[in-house]
Amino acid sequence: MLNAPLRWPLDRVTTPLGVMLLVTDTQNTLRALDWADSEARMLDRLRLLYGSDEVTLTSGTAPQPIRNALEAYWAGDLNAVSAIPVETAGTEFQRDAWAWLRSIPAGETRSYREQARGMDRASAVRAVGRANGANPIGIVIPCHRVIGADGTLTGYAGGMERKRWLLRHEGGDF
Image (tube, rainbow, N blue to C red; front, side, top):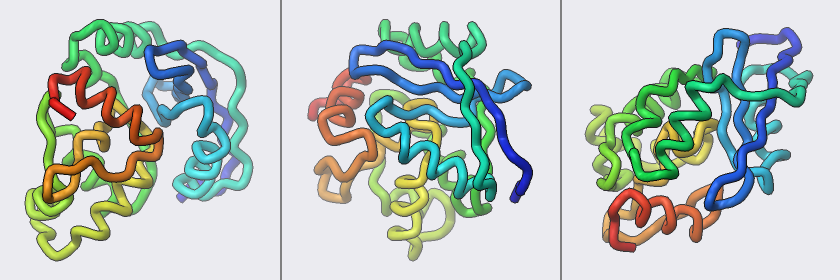
């Protein structure tokens, strides 16, 4: 964990679901993606993940390739976000869970149990749920593609209406 202060640019992008916040670093890597109505939660999550009480987000513009990929996603190129470089701190388990999420194809869903099994951690269903809930890079690390074992929609930090919209956008029938 880092203890040094973090200073990263914060971009605000209008999407069909509201204003989206993009945090990138000096290597043009996406560090966080959340919604403007969750900015305080996003800052808390960054402080927790990076072990720094001092996280400063300055007004800036995300690198054009990241913005272009997200615009393409909203326009219907659902795989465009898979090329966005991401980097995040977190426990080894969290990072494994987030990497596994990126393997779920657009238009498909998995249950928490399927994710736990896919990570060779069949008994860690609740831990998988907690890791997904701590995901700092929504949409690009697609935690919205994880649903309940019975096929119902389950929690999403961005709200259930956004989750439903994202899954429909990707071709799901929810």
